[in-house]
Image (tube, rainbow, N blue to C red; front, side, top):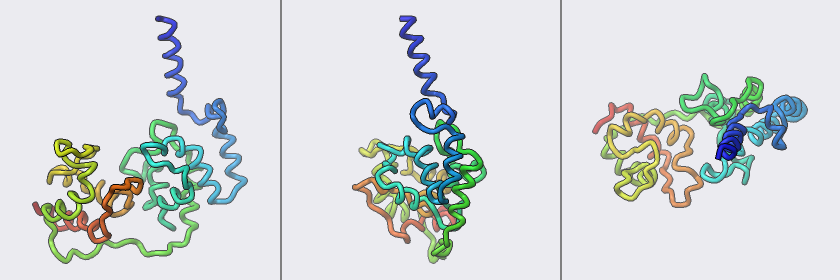
Length: 224
């Protein structure tokens, strides 16, 4: 029993190591090897290599697999010319992201890796103007928001678990719950547009006008 406990401890300890220099022990390049290789390729290939080495391992299965179409997975998370509004960059920068940093439970990207991603995004031509929230033509109430968007596009995963929904965090089926998380909801639904997730074949995707209702509700004073 003591021998088994020791083996289990060593195994868990090995899995918990997140330093990228250990990667070479498992077939991947060390951090220094990766940085040397990044100097020899194009700006886009640098981003692709960083994503392959630091992101792909987690973004499989439950997370929707990036490996199926890496180019599409990268482009969906980039706002040309704007790193701050590009989740591929912002989620790795502690000065930008309000949410947990990526990669989760692993060593953060180095400054040079973040710089490569930022510089690539800055090099892209900004083909469309910064999205501006539509003018508030009318006050939006929570009743309107719930009937138009929450019950239709969000309730399946973030609704009341007692109503046979998935019950994922954060719950978004009461006035207080949505008001408390409004910045996160606007960020995911209106800005990043990654909620509902594309991999959900049963999702009902809101229109641009419907996505903007969360912002309008906030700007209108959170009417009940």
